[in-house]
Length: 305
Image 1 (cartoon, rainbow, N blue to C red):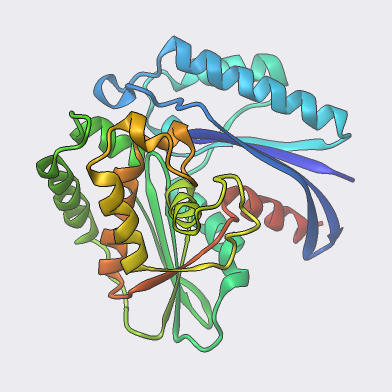
Image 2 (image 1 turned 90 degrees about the vertical axis):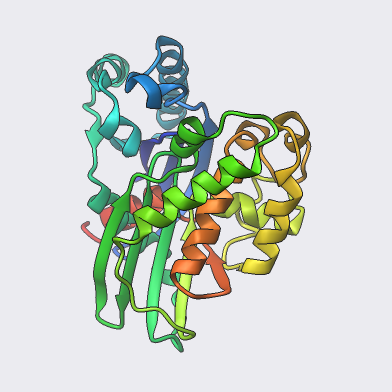
């Protein structure tokens, strides 16, 4: 039987329909993501705007219709950083329950990290001593490290592309001093992260920033997720894209091949977070995963049936 799930993120609302094939395997029927910025202007007031709630609710209504038309059983509607933080989260929860009959599950940063790790495990490099996954989202970043025996550390930090853009970026194009403020803020947060790094670590990245970095480096359409899964990006190539975008206005960035125009205002901040994480792990490359929290959730479900 087909199943579906919806993830309410800071920057986008995501949807998946999958069909379990066996206990440890499933087939993706459809996967969609709508960049609707639920958190727009939230980080000053800690409140979601009525317009943002309306837009998010409409996306969910469309996904619910698609789930029904495909004969899929809706397993969960869950949210990550944005509803962990919002002071008026209950308004969103009530609106969604009215149209779906289902409560929204606000998952912890730790749970988000575990699901991300599950989704990315297939990209493990058996020759590496260590395996690490980073998930750069709109509101938070998850860092998960492990070895041959599984996860040994997982952490969720309030450093996301949307959050830090709204907090620290005031000009268009971005002033160098403001991007330096982003770098310092991120590095300060990363001081609390203890990792074992080195040349034999396999670092995998997921989330909108990492996937967008890949599509921009490849100069391929931003929705070409199948074309970037497993791609290896170097720090040099990421910095090259960052430097190219640094002097551009948001309007100019909207025309860059591989960049979803709706991410144009936050991509510089996201790339700076990514560069800082590469520095943290003392590595000059990262493997891109097109799979994330939703796939981790579906994988967990198929393993339980």
